[in-house]
Length: 165
Image (cartoon, rainbow, N blue to C red; front, side, top):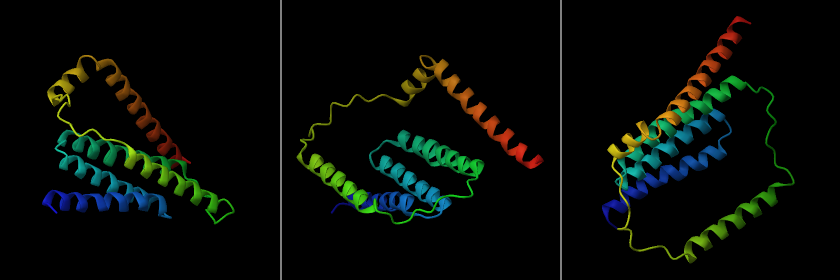
């Protein structure tokens, strides 16, 4: 086993553990922390694939912004009476459906002929991405920033409104 494989497994294990922790944690904040672990581990896999830009985007956008957005949504909704997830009659059917999905997924991955020649990838530089972002896509980029700013202002107004009550 090469050192690349060892590093891959060292990075892949927290990814899987974090993903399992997201869906099995009983506390929502713990689930969000597991999500951060999983997303940061995916950034490590991007680094192993020599995609440093994607790793930075993964950390900044998904590891930071999306997780904070989820935590803000949980804090602002303040659902006090959440129904408890109990074992019900649907649990065996859900387990059967999950198992069937896993079998079909593994079968399709194993039976698919994956391309062996990956040298035909069209590589685009980060400079080209930046040029396209601020020339061709400047208006949608600014609209997205305005939408995010309005959402942030709405969260501030909601938070301040609760303090005055």
